Image (cartoon, rainbow, N blue to C red; front, top):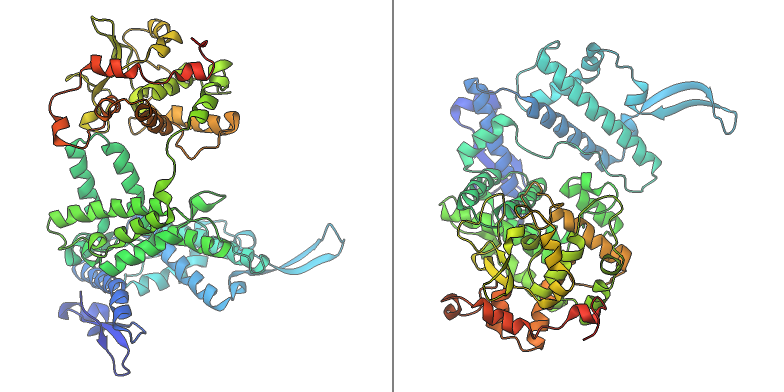
Length: 574
Protein backbone atom coordinates (compact mmCIF):
# COMPACT_ATOMS: atom_id res chain seq x y z
CA UNK A 1 0.00 0.00 0.00
CA UNK A 2 1.24 3.51 -0.85
CA UNK A 3 2.31 5.26 2.35
CA UNK A 4 0.95 8.76 3.17
CA UNK A 5 3.15 11.76 2.41
CA UNK A 6 3.18 15.31 3.76
CA UNK A 7 1.86 18.16 1.63
CA UNK A 8 3.17 21.73 1.70
CA UNK A 9 1.10 22.50 4.83
CA UNK A 10 2.47 19.56 6.79
CA UNK A 11 -0.82 17.62 6.43
CA UNK A 12 -0.70 14.00 5.35
CA UNK A 13 -2.10 13.06 1.95
CA UNK A 14 -2.50 9.91 -0.13
CA UNK A 15 -0.98 10.26 -3.58
CA UNK A 16 -0.51 7.79 -6.41
CA UNK A 17 0.61 8.21 -10.01
CA UNK A 18 -2.05 7.47 -12.60
CA UNK A 19 -0.88 4.91 -15.19
CA UNK A 20 -0.03 6.75 -18.42
CA UNK A 21 -2.62 4.96 -20.56
CA UNK A 22 -5.37 5.89 -18.06
CA UNK A 23 -4.58 9.60 -17.71
CA UNK A 24 -7.09 10.54 -20.42
CA UNK A 25 -9.82 8.54 -18.65
CA UNK A 26 -9.08 9.69 -15.09
CA UNK A 27 -8.42 13.26 -16.24
CA UNK A 28 -5.31 13.84 -14.13
CA UNK A 29 -1.69 12.73 -13.77
CA UNK A 30 -1.82 12.16 -10.00
CA UNK A 31 -4.68 10.77 -7.93
CA UNK A 32 -4.60 12.19 -4.42
CA UNK A 33 -6.71 12.76 -1.33
CA UNK A 34 -5.98 14.84 1.75
CA UNK A 35 -6.09 12.76 4.93
CA UNK A 36 -6.71 15.94 7.01
CA UNK A 37 -4.35 14.95 9.82
CA UNK A 38 -0.80 15.61 10.98
CA UNK A 39 -0.71 12.41 13.06
CA UNK A 40 1.23 9.70 11.17
CA UNK A 41 -0.58 6.83 12.93
CA UNK A 42 -4.00 8.28 12.10
CA UNK A 43 -2.90 8.95 8.52
CA UNK A 44 -1.75 5.37 8.06
CA UNK A 45 -5.09 4.07 9.30
CA UNK A 46 -7.08 6.40 7.06
CA UNK A 47 -4.91 5.59 4.06
CA UNK A 48 -6.25 2.04 4.06
CA UNK A 49 -9.73 3.07 2.92
CA UNK A 50 -8.38 5.74 0.55
CA UNK A 51 -6.07 3.16 -1.03
CA UNK A 52 -9.05 0.94 -1.72
CA UNK A 53 -10.92 3.89 -3.27
CA UNK A 54 -7.92 4.66 -5.47
CA UNK A 55 -7.68 1.03 -6.61
CA UNK A 56 -11.35 1.05 -7.52
CA UNK A 57 -10.96 4.28 -9.52
CA UNK A 58 -8.03 2.79 -11.45
CA UNK A 59 -9.92 -0.46 -11.97
CA UNK A 60 -12.92 1.42 -13.31
CA UNK A 61 -10.74 3.51 -15.59
CA UNK A 62 -9.09 0.37 -16.91
CA UNK A 63 -12.48 -1.14 -17.62
CA UNK A 64 -13.57 1.93 -19.55
CA UNK A 65 -10.23 1.99 -21.40
CA UNK A 66 -10.48 -1.61 -22.62
CA UNK A 67 -14.28 -1.59 -23.05
CA UNK A 68 -14.97 -4.32 -20.48
CA UNK A 69 -17.14 -2.21 -18.14
CA UNK A 70 -20.76 -3.32 -18.11
CA UNK A 71 -23.42 -2.52 -15.54
CA UNK A 72 -25.55 -5.34 -14.14
CA UNK A 73 -28.65 -5.36 -11.89
CA UNK A 74 -26.61 -5.23 -8.67
CA UNK A 75 -24.70 -2.21 -10.01
CA UNK A 76 -27.98 -0.36 -10.56
CA UNK A 77 -28.94 -0.77 -6.90
CA UNK A 78 -25.41 0.04 -5.73
CA UNK A 79 -25.28 3.30 -7.70
CA UNK A 80 -28.67 4.35 -6.32
CA UNK A 81 -27.58 3.43 -2.79
CA UNK A 82 -24.34 5.42 -3.16
CA UNK A 83 -26.35 8.44 -4.33
CA UNK A 84 -28.68 8.05 -1.33
CA UNK A 85 -25.76 7.89 1.14
CA UNK A 86 -24.04 10.92 -0.34
CA UNK A 87 -27.21 13.03 -0.24
CA UNK A 88 -28.10 11.90 3.28
CA UNK A 89 -24.57 12.61 4.49
CA UNK A 90 -24.85 16.20 3.22
CA UNK A 91 -28.27 16.62 4.79
CA UNK A 92 -27.09 15.33 8.17
CA UNK A 93 -24.14 17.75 8.03
CA UNK A 94 -26.33 20.77 7.25
CA UNK A 95 -29.68 19.82 8.77
CA UNK A 96 -31.43 21.11 5.63
CA UNK A 97 -33.92 18.26 5.41
CA UNK A 98 -36.52 20.60 3.88
CA UNK A 99 -34.59 20.51 0.59
CA UNK A 100 -36.04 17.09 -0.22
CA UNK A 101 -39.66 17.93 0.60
CA UNK A 102 -42.39 19.06 -1.76
CA UNK A 103 -44.38 22.18 -0.98
CA UNK A 104 -48.02 21.39 -1.78
CA UNK A 105 -51.13 23.60 -2.03
CA UNK A 106 -54.06 21.85 -0.42
CA UNK A 107 -57.53 23.42 -0.23
CA UNK A 108 -59.00 20.66 1.94
CA UNK A 109 -60.02 21.25 5.55
CA UNK A 110 -58.42 20.04 8.74
CA UNK A 111 -61.02 17.62 10.15
CA UNK A 112 -60.21 18.60 13.74
CA UNK A 113 -60.45 22.40 13.41
CA UNK A 114 -62.47 22.93 10.22
CA UNK A 115 -59.80 25.39 9.00
CA UNK A 116 -58.19 25.21 5.53
CA UNK A 117 -54.91 23.34 5.58
CA UNK A 118 -53.31 25.69 3.05
CA UNK A 119 -49.71 25.18 1.95
CA UNK A 120 -47.75 22.40 3.61
CA UNK A 121 -44.75 20.16 3.06
CA UNK A 122 -45.07 16.57 1.91
CA UNK A 123 -42.91 13.87 0.33
CA UNK A 124 -42.04 13.22 -3.29
CA UNK A 125 -43.89 9.93 -3.21
CA UNK A 126 -47.20 11.51 -2.23
CA UNK A 127 -47.05 14.76 -4.22
CA UNK A 128 -45.10 14.10 -7.43
CA UNK A 129 -46.97 12.32 -10.20
CA UNK A 130 -45.21 9.36 -11.85
CA UNK A 131 -47.68 7.74 -14.20
CA UNK A 132 -45.20 6.37 -16.73
CA UNK A 133 -41.60 5.38 -17.38
CA UNK A 134 -41.12 8.78 -19.00
CA UNK A 135 -42.12 10.49 -15.73
CA UNK A 136 -39.60 8.39 -13.79
CA UNK A 137 -36.84 9.25 -16.24
CA UNK A 138 -37.70 12.98 -16.13
CA UNK A 139 -37.46 13.13 -12.33
CA UNK A 140 -34.37 10.96 -11.95
CA UNK A 141 -32.23 11.61 -15.06
CA UNK A 142 -30.22 14.49 -13.52
CA UNK A 143 -29.21 12.33 -10.54
CA UNK A 144 -28.42 9.33 -12.73
CA UNK A 145 -26.27 11.43 -15.06
CA UNK A 146 -24.38 12.97 -12.12
CA UNK A 147 -23.59 9.55 -10.60
CA UNK A 148 -22.46 8.10 -13.91
CA UNK A 149 -20.20 11.09 -14.46
CA UNK A 150 -18.81 10.89 -10.93
CA UNK A 151 -17.91 7.24 -11.52
CA UNK A 152 -16.39 8.02 -14.97
CA UNK A 153 -19.07 5.89 -16.60
CA UNK A 154 -20.39 6.63 -20.08
CA UNK A 155 -23.93 8.11 -20.19
CA UNK A 156 -26.90 5.74 -20.52
CA UNK A 157 -29.44 6.65 -23.21
CA UNK A 158 -32.97 7.47 -22.00
CA UNK A 159 -35.46 4.91 -23.22
CA UNK A 160 -33.12 1.93 -22.92
CA UNK A 161 -33.80 -0.97 -20.59
CA UNK A 162 -30.78 -0.08 -18.45
CA UNK A 163 -31.90 3.54 -18.03
CA UNK A 164 -35.38 2.32 -17.03
CA UNK A 165 -33.82 0.13 -14.32
CA UNK A 166 -31.70 3.02 -13.10
CA UNK A 167 -34.72 5.35 -13.08
CA UNK A 168 -36.79 2.94 -11.03
CA UNK A 169 -33.98 2.37 -8.50
CA UNK A 170 -33.18 6.08 -8.15
CA UNK A 171 -36.88 6.99 -7.80
CA UNK A 172 -37.32 4.46 -5.01
CA UNK A 173 -34.31 5.87 -3.15
CA UNK A 174 -35.45 9.46 -3.82
CA UNK A 175 -38.84 8.70 -2.26
CA UNK A 176 -37.17 6.99 0.71
CA UNK A 177 -34.91 10.00 1.21
CA UNK A 178 -37.84 12.42 1.04
CA UNK A 179 -39.90 10.34 3.48
CA UNK A 180 -36.92 10.15 5.87
CA UNK A 181 -36.44 13.94 5.71
CA UNK A 182 -40.08 14.58 6.60
CA UNK A 183 -39.90 12.08 9.46
CA UNK A 184 -36.77 13.66 10.89
CA UNK A 185 -38.28 17.14 10.73
CA UNK A 186 -41.45 15.95 12.47
CA UNK A 187 -39.44 14.00 15.05
CA UNK A 188 -37.97 17.26 16.40
CA UNK A 189 -34.50 15.93 17.09
CA UNK A 190 -35.42 12.32 18.01
CA UNK A 191 -33.47 9.66 16.16
CA UNK A 192 -35.25 8.26 13.09
CA UNK A 193 -33.46 5.29 11.47
CA UNK A 194 -32.65 5.28 7.77
CA UNK A 195 -34.43 2.84 5.45
CA UNK A 196 -32.73 -0.39 4.44
CA UNK A 197 -30.65 0.03 1.28
CA UNK A 198 -28.01 -2.07 -0.48
CA UNK A 199 -24.93 -2.45 1.76
CA UNK A 200 -21.65 -0.83 0.78
CA UNK A 201 -19.95 -2.95 -1.88
CA UNK A 202 -17.85 -2.47 -5.02
CA UNK A 203 -19.56 -2.45 -8.40
CA UNK A 204 -19.30 -5.70 -10.34
CA UNK A 205 -16.41 -4.60 -12.54
CA UNK A 206 -14.67 -2.98 -9.55
CA UNK A 207 -14.72 -6.26 -7.61
CA UNK A 208 -12.95 -8.20 -10.33
CA UNK A 209 -10.36 -5.50 -10.97
CA UNK A 210 -9.66 -4.77 -7.32
CA UNK A 211 -9.02 -8.47 -6.73
CA UNK A 212 -6.54 -8.47 -9.60
CA UNK A 213 -4.78 -5.31 -8.48
CA UNK A 214 -4.82 -5.60 -4.68
CA UNK A 215 -5.23 -9.36 -4.17
CA UNK A 216 -8.11 -11.34 -2.75
CA UNK A 217 -10.83 -9.51 -0.86
CA UNK A 218 -12.24 -10.72 2.45
CA UNK A 219 -15.32 -12.21 0.80
CA UNK A 220 -13.13 -14.06 -1.71
CA UNK A 221 -11.06 -15.48 1.16
CA UNK A 222 -14.27 -16.43 2.95
CA UNK A 223 -15.49 -18.38 -0.08
CA UNK A 224 -12.17 -20.22 -0.28
CA UNK A 225 -12.26 -20.92 3.48
CA UNK A 226 -15.82 -22.24 3.23
CA UNK A 227 -14.91 -24.54 0.34
CA UNK A 228 -11.97 -25.89 2.36
CA UNK A 229 -14.10 -26.53 5.45
CA UNK A 230 -16.83 -28.29 3.47
CA UNK A 231 -14.18 -30.51 1.87
CA UNK A 232 -12.92 -31.48 5.34
CA UNK A 233 -16.42 -32.74 6.23
CA UNK A 234 -16.10 -31.68 9.84
CA UNK A 235 -18.83 -32.68 12.25
CA UNK A 236 -20.05 -29.16 12.99
CA UNK A 237 -19.22 -27.66 9.60
CA UNK A 238 -22.74 -26.61 8.57
CA UNK A 239 -23.52 -24.87 11.86
CA UNK A 240 -20.10 -23.25 12.14
CA UNK A 241 -20.13 -21.99 8.56
CA UNK A 242 -23.59 -20.51 9.04
CA UNK A 243 -22.35 -18.59 12.10
CA UNK A 244 -19.14 -17.49 10.38
CA UNK A 245 -21.01 -16.28 7.31
CA UNK A 246 -23.05 -13.87 9.44
CA UNK A 247 -19.90 -12.64 11.19
CA UNK A 248 -18.14 -11.98 7.88
CA UNK A 249 -21.16 -10.17 6.46
CA UNK A 250 -21.32 -7.99 9.58
CA UNK A 251 -17.63 -7.09 9.16
CA UNK A 252 -18.21 -6.17 5.50
CA UNK A 253 -21.07 -3.88 6.54
CA UNK A 254 -18.70 -2.13 8.94
CA UNK A 255 -15.60 -1.81 6.74
CA UNK A 256 -16.50 -2.97 3.23
CA UNK A 257 -15.16 -5.94 1.29
CA UNK A 258 -11.56 -4.92 1.82
CA UNK A 259 -8.52 -6.55 0.19
CA UNK A 260 -7.25 -9.11 2.69
CA UNK A 261 -3.79 -7.55 2.42
CA UNK A 262 -5.12 -4.31 3.92
CA UNK A 263 -6.37 -6.04 7.10
CA UNK A 264 -3.92 -4.48 9.56
CA UNK A 265 -3.38 -4.63 13.32
CA UNK A 266 -4.97 -1.17 13.55
CA UNK A 267 -8.06 -2.45 11.74
CA UNK A 268 -8.27 -5.42 14.10
CA UNK A 269 -8.36 -3.01 17.04
CA UNK A 270 -10.94 -0.81 15.31
CA UNK A 271 -13.06 -3.92 14.67
CA UNK A 272 -12.89 -4.87 18.33
CA UNK A 273 -14.02 -1.38 19.39
CA UNK A 274 -16.94 -1.40 16.96
CA UNK A 275 -18.00 -4.84 18.22
CA UNK A 276 -18.05 -3.42 21.76
CA UNK A 277 -20.54 -0.77 20.53
CA UNK A 278 -22.71 -3.22 18.56
CA UNK A 279 -26.19 -3.66 20.10
CA UNK A 280 -27.89 -6.96 20.76
CA UNK A 281 -29.91 -7.57 17.58
CA UNK A 282 -33.30 -7.44 19.24
CA UNK A 283 -35.97 -4.81 19.21
CA UNK A 284 -38.33 -3.28 16.71
CA UNK A 285 -36.71 -2.51 13.36
CA UNK A 286 -33.12 -3.10 14.45
CA UNK A 287 -32.67 -6.30 12.41
CA UNK A 288 -33.36 -4.39 9.21
CA UNK A 289 -30.59 -1.85 9.83
CA UNK A 290 -27.02 -1.97 8.59
CA UNK A 291 -24.29 -2.59 11.14
CA UNK A 292 -23.31 1.09 11.25
CA UNK A 293 -26.94 2.17 11.63
CA UNK A 294 -27.35 -0.25 14.54
CA UNK A 295 -24.32 1.24 16.29
CA UNK A 296 -25.64 4.78 15.72
CA UNK A 297 -29.01 3.82 17.17
CA UNK A 298 -27.38 2.10 20.15
CA UNK A 299 -25.25 5.18 20.84
CA UNK A 300 -28.29 7.48 20.60
CA UNK A 301 -30.63 5.38 22.74
CA UNK A 302 -28.19 3.58 25.05
CA UNK A 303 -29.26 0.12 23.90
CA UNK A 304 -27.67 -2.99 25.47
CA UNK A 305 -24.54 -4.14 23.62
CA UNK A 306 -23.35 -7.63 22.75
CA UNK A 307 -21.45 -9.37 25.54
CA UNK A 308 -17.66 -9.65 25.72
CA UNK A 309 -18.10 -13.39 25.17
CA UNK A 310 -19.90 -12.71 21.88
CA UNK A 311 -17.17 -10.26 20.89
CA UNK A 312 -14.59 -12.95 21.61
CA UNK A 313 -16.54 -15.45 19.50
CA UNK A 314 -16.63 -13.09 16.51
CA UNK A 315 -12.94 -12.28 16.80
CA UNK A 316 -12.18 -16.00 16.96
CA UNK A 317 -14.19 -16.58 13.77
CA UNK A 318 -12.36 -13.82 11.90
CA UNK A 319 -9.05 -15.14 13.21
CA UNK A 320 -9.79 -18.59 11.80
CA UNK A 321 -10.40 -17.11 8.35
CA UNK A 322 -7.25 -14.96 8.56
CA UNK A 323 -5.20 -17.97 9.67
CA UNK A 324 -6.42 -19.82 6.60
CA UNK A 325 -5.38 -16.85 4.42
CA UNK A 326 -1.96 -16.88 6.10
CA UNK A 327 -1.58 -20.63 5.51
CA UNK A 328 -2.40 -20.06 1.84
CA UNK A 329 0.28 -17.37 1.57
CA UNK A 330 -2.16 -14.53 0.86
CA UNK A 331 -1.09 -12.56 3.96
CA UNK A 332 2.07 -12.68 6.06
CA UNK A 333 0.53 -12.41 9.54
CA UNK A 334 -2.81 -12.83 11.31
CA UNK A 335 -3.70 -9.32 12.58
CA UNK A 336 -6.24 -10.62 15.10
CA UNK A 337 -3.45 -12.63 16.76
CA UNK A 338 -0.62 -10.15 16.28
CA UNK A 339 -2.62 -7.19 17.58
CA UNK A 340 -3.54 -9.07 20.76
CA UNK A 341 -7.21 -8.02 20.60
CA UNK A 342 -8.49 -11.51 21.45
CA UNK A 343 -6.25 -11.72 24.51
CA UNK A 344 -7.42 -8.33 25.72
CA UNK A 345 -11.08 -9.30 25.34
CA UNK A 346 -10.38 -12.58 27.19
CA UNK A 347 -8.78 -10.62 30.04
CA UNK A 348 -11.81 -8.32 30.16
CA UNK A 349 -14.08 -11.36 30.45
CA UNK A 350 -11.98 -12.82 33.27
CA UNK A 351 -11.87 -9.53 35.17
CA UNK A 352 -15.62 -9.10 34.86
CA UNK A 353 -16.21 -12.63 36.08
CA UNK A 354 -18.28 -13.42 32.98
CA UNK A 355 -16.61 -16.80 32.51
CA UNK A 356 -17.59 -17.80 36.06
CA UNK A 357 -21.31 -17.69 35.33
CA UNK A 358 -23.00 -20.87 36.53
CA UNK A 359 -23.75 -23.19 33.62
CA UNK A 360 -25.37 -26.13 35.39
CA UNK A 361 -28.84 -26.55 36.84
CA UNK A 362 -28.93 -26.73 40.62
CA UNK A 363 -30.60 -29.66 42.38
CA UNK A 364 -33.62 -27.47 43.16
CA UNK A 365 -33.86 -26.29 39.56
CA UNK A 366 -33.80 -29.88 38.32
CA UNK A 367 -36.61 -30.71 40.74
CA UNK A 368 -38.62 -27.69 39.53
CA UNK A 369 -38.17 -28.66 35.88
CA UNK A 370 -38.99 -32.36 36.32
CA UNK A 371 -42.09 -31.61 38.37
CA UNK A 372 -43.44 -29.11 35.82
CA UNK A 373 -46.56 -29.59 33.61
CA UNK A 374 -44.78 -31.46 30.77
CA UNK A 375 -43.91 -34.28 33.18
CA UNK A 376 -46.92 -34.33 35.53
CA UNK A 377 -49.83 -32.95 33.46
CA UNK A 378 -49.06 -34.02 29.88
CA UNK A 379 -48.62 -30.38 28.80
CA UNK A 380 -48.32 -29.84 25.03
CA UNK A 381 -47.42 -26.78 22.92
CA UNK A 382 -50.63 -25.05 21.78
CA UNK A 383 -49.86 -25.37 18.05
CA UNK A 384 -46.85 -27.56 17.21
CA UNK A 385 -46.98 -31.32 17.75
CA UNK A 386 -43.61 -32.56 18.99
CA UNK A 387 -44.89 -35.96 20.04
CA UNK A 388 -43.15 -37.18 23.21
CA UNK A 389 -39.92 -35.24 22.60
CA UNK A 390 -40.64 -32.59 25.27
CA UNK A 391 -41.08 -35.35 27.85
CA UNK A 392 -38.25 -37.77 27.05
CA UNK A 393 -35.45 -35.56 25.74
CA UNK A 394 -34.99 -33.54 28.97
CA UNK A 395 -35.11 -36.77 31.02
CA UNK A 396 -32.54 -38.44 28.79
CA UNK A 397 -30.34 -35.33 28.96
CA UNK A 398 -30.58 -35.21 32.75
CA UNK A 399 -29.60 -38.88 33.13
CA UNK A 400 -26.95 -39.11 30.38
CA UNK A 401 -25.55 -35.60 29.85
CA UNK A 402 -26.07 -36.04 26.09
CA UNK A 403 -26.33 -33.01 23.83
CA UNK A 404 -29.65 -31.81 22.41
CA UNK A 405 -28.98 -32.76 18.79
CA UNK A 406 -27.40 -36.09 19.76
CA UNK A 407 -30.73 -37.09 21.31
CA UNK A 408 -32.97 -35.49 18.69
CA UNK A 409 -31.37 -37.42 15.82
CA UNK A 410 -31.57 -40.90 17.40
CA UNK A 411 -33.32 -43.76 15.66
CA UNK A 412 -35.31 -46.42 17.50
CA UNK A 413 -32.57 -48.92 16.62
CA UNK A 414 -30.12 -46.79 18.63
CA UNK A 415 -31.81 -47.89 21.89
CA UNK A 416 -30.12 -51.23 22.54
CA UNK A 417 -29.53 -53.96 25.09
CA UNK A 418 -26.48 -56.15 25.64
CA UNK A 419 -26.79 -59.94 26.04
CA UNK A 420 -26.26 -59.34 29.77
CA UNK A 421 -29.35 -57.08 29.86
CA UNK A 422 -27.66 -53.64 30.02
CA UNK A 423 -29.74 -50.95 28.30
CA UNK A 424 -27.85 -48.25 26.44
CA UNK A 425 -27.92 -45.65 23.66
CA UNK A 426 -25.61 -45.99 20.66
CA UNK A 427 -24.77 -42.45 19.56
CA UNK A 428 -23.42 -42.95 16.02
CA UNK A 429 -21.07 -45.59 17.41
CA UNK A 430 -21.30 -47.99 14.47
CA UNK A 431 -18.72 -47.62 11.71
CA UNK A 432 -21.46 -47.57 9.07
CA UNK A 433 -23.94 -45.53 11.10
CA UNK A 434 -23.77 -42.26 9.18
CA UNK A 435 -25.91 -40.65 6.52
CA UNK A 436 -29.30 -38.96 6.61
CA UNK A 437 -27.52 -35.83 7.88
CA UNK A 438 -26.78 -37.27 11.33
CA UNK A 439 -23.52 -36.15 12.87
CA UNK A 440 -21.74 -35.57 16.16
CA UNK A 441 -19.54 -32.75 17.38
CA UNK A 442 -16.22 -34.60 17.76
CA UNK A 443 -14.80 -38.08 17.24
CA UNK A 444 -15.11 -38.81 20.99
CA UNK A 445 -18.82 -38.00 20.76
CA UNK A 446 -19.36 -41.37 19.05
CA UNK A 447 -20.09 -43.55 22.04
CA UNK A 448 -22.33 -45.97 23.88
CA UNK A 449 -24.19 -44.46 26.82
CA UNK A 450 -25.70 -46.59 29.62
CA UNK A 451 -29.31 -45.83 30.56
CA UNK A 452 -30.38 -45.34 34.17
CA UNK A 453 -33.04 -47.67 35.59
CA UNK A 454 -35.26 -44.66 36.42
CA UNK A 455 -35.91 -44.08 32.70
CA UNK A 456 -37.43 -47.53 32.29
CA UNK A 457 -39.38 -47.19 35.52
CA UNK A 458 -40.93 -44.09 33.94
CA UNK A 459 -41.92 -46.05 30.83
CA UNK A 460 -39.10 -45.39 28.37
CA UNK A 461 -39.03 -49.03 27.28
CA UNK A 462 -42.77 -49.02 26.52
CA UNK A 463 -42.38 -45.78 24.58
CA UNK A 464 -39.62 -47.27 22.42
CA UNK A 465 -41.68 -50.41 21.74
CA UNK A 466 -44.62 -48.27 20.57
CA UNK A 467 -42.55 -46.87 17.68
CA UNK A 468 -41.64 -48.33 14.30
CA UNK A 469 -38.34 -50.16 14.63
CA UNK A 470 -37.08 -48.51 11.43
CA UNK A 471 -38.01 -44.94 12.38
CA UNK A 472 -36.81 -42.06 14.51
CA UNK A 473 -36.92 -42.14 18.28
CA UNK A 474 -38.66 -38.75 18.11
CA UNK A 475 -40.50 -38.91 14.77
CA UNK A 476 -42.11 -35.46 15.05
CA UNK A 477 -38.72 -33.73 14.95
CA UNK A 478 -37.55 -32.84 11.44
CA UNK A 479 -34.24 -31.60 10.08
CA UNK A 480 -33.72 -27.89 9.61
CA UNK A 481 -31.78 -26.29 6.77
CA UNK A 482 -28.50 -27.03 8.57
CA UNK A 483 -29.35 -30.70 8.94
CA UNK A 484 -30.12 -30.56 12.68
CA UNK A 485 -33.07 -32.39 14.22
CA UNK A 486 -33.09 -30.54 17.55
CA UNK A 487 -33.86 -26.99 16.47
CA UNK A 488 -37.66 -27.38 16.49
CA UNK A 489 -37.41 -28.87 19.99
CA UNK A 490 -35.20 -26.01 21.19
CA UNK A 491 -37.60 -23.37 19.90
CA UNK A 492 -40.26 -24.70 22.29
CA UNK A 493 -38.25 -25.97 25.26
CA UNK A 494 -36.59 -22.66 26.16
CA UNK A 495 -39.82 -20.60 26.04
CA UNK A 496 -41.60 -23.35 28.00
CA UNK A 497 -39.11 -23.07 30.87
CA UNK A 498 -39.52 -19.29 31.00
CA UNK A 499 -43.22 -18.77 30.28
CA UNK A 500 -44.82 -21.92 31.71
CA UNK A 501 -42.40 -23.10 34.41
CA UNK A 502 -41.26 -19.60 35.37
CA UNK A 503 -37.67 -20.81 35.72
CA UNK A 504 -34.99 -18.18 36.28
CA UNK A 505 -31.61 -19.81 35.73
CA UNK A 506 -28.34 -18.73 34.08
CA UNK A 507 -28.00 -22.25 32.63
CA UNK A 508 -28.78 -22.83 28.94
CA UNK A 509 -32.16 -24.57 28.48
CA UNK A 510 -30.82 -27.99 27.40
CA UNK A 511 -27.06 -27.65 27.89
CA UNK A 512 -27.70 -26.99 31.56
CA UNK A 513 -28.56 -30.70 31.94
CA UNK A 514 -25.16 -31.65 30.50
CA UNK A 515 -23.34 -29.47 33.02
CA UNK A 516 -25.59 -30.66 35.85
CA UNK A 517 -24.88 -34.30 34.95
CA UNK A 518 -21.14 -33.69 35.33
CA UNK A 519 -21.64 -31.88 38.63
CA UNK A 520 -23.80 -34.66 40.05
CA UNK A 521 -21.36 -37.35 38.86
CA UNK A 522 -18.53 -35.64 40.72
CA UNK A 523 -20.75 -35.22 43.78
CA UNK A 524 -21.39 -38.95 44.14
CA UNK A 525 -17.83 -39.99 43.33
CA UNK A 526 -18.17 -41.28 39.78
CA UNK A 527 -14.58 -41.20 38.44
CA UNK A 528 -13.70 -38.55 35.87
CA UNK A 529 -12.71 -41.05 33.18
CA UNK A 530 -16.10 -42.75 33.50
CA UNK A 531 -18.34 -39.67 33.27
CA UNK A 532 -16.12 -38.27 30.51
CA UNK A 533 -16.72 -41.48 28.54
CA UNK A 534 -20.48 -41.20 29.16
CA UNK A 535 -20.66 -37.58 27.98
CA UNK A 536 -18.21 -38.02 25.11
CA UNK A 537 -15.44 -35.78 26.41
CA UNK A 538 -11.98 -36.81 25.28
CA UNK A 539 -10.29 -36.38 28.67
CA UNK A 540 -7.12 -34.59 29.65
CA UNK A 541 -4.37 -37.17 29.04
CA UNK A 542 -2.98 -39.06 26.07
CA UNK A 543 -3.44 -42.31 27.97
CA UNK A 544 -7.21 -41.93 27.98
CA UNK A 545 -7.24 -42.03 24.19
CA UNK A 546 -5.96 -45.62 24.33
CA UNK A 547 -8.49 -48.41 24.55
CA UNK A 548 -12.16 -47.84 25.41
CA UNK A 549 -14.34 -47.61 28.51
CA UNK A 550 -16.34 -50.85 29.08
CA UNK A 551 -20.09 -50.30 29.01
CA UNK A 552 -20.50 -52.54 32.09
CA UNK A 553 -18.12 -50.31 34.07
CA UNK A 554 -20.06 -47.18 33.06
CA UNK A 555 -23.38 -48.83 33.95
CA UNK A 556 -22.06 -49.91 37.34
CA UNK A 557 -20.86 -46.39 38.20
CA UNK A 558 -24.11 -44.84 36.91
CA UNK A 559 -26.01 -46.68 39.66
CA UNK A 560 -24.51 -44.11 42.04
CA UNK A 561 -26.22 -41.28 40.14
CA UNK A 562 -29.01 -39.54 42.11
CA UNK A 563 -32.60 -40.57 41.40
CA UNK A 564 -33.86 -37.25 40.06
CA UNK A 565 -37.26 -38.72 39.19
CA UNK A 566 -37.83 -39.73 42.82
CA UNK A 567 -36.79 -36.27 44.04
CA UNK A 568 -39.23 -34.61 41.61
CA UNK A 569 -42.08 -36.93 42.59
CA UNK A 570 -42.29 -38.67 39.20
CA UNK A 571 -41.57 -41.99 40.89
CA UNK A 572 -42.64 -43.07 44.40
CA UNK A 573 -39.98 -42.95 47.05
CA UNK A 574 -38.25 -46.33 47.52
